Image 1: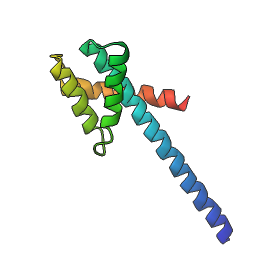
Image 2: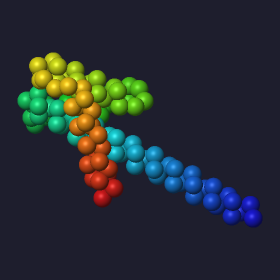
Image 3: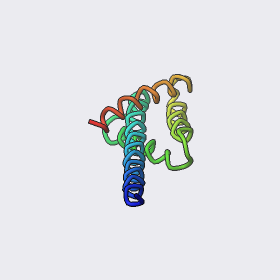
Length: 106
């Protein structure tokens, strides 16, 4: 009986670990896509756009949740005098989360 329980517990732990890994990859992908989108609005391309996207991904490690990413992107947009609201950026983040999940899970 305890063997079945232990197997079930291990399976649940493995599922949790897989789900956490997928969530991490989805967030990183979303942040990269958001960084590339913002870079385009700023007028960056090529290596500069990739660098901005990488910085956006790295910003996510500053604190839990998406606020650090939002601040990074908003600062880049503001520094480039791109007129866009925080609500518009949040909406884009939400839309890109769906795109990122599809790309990671496929």
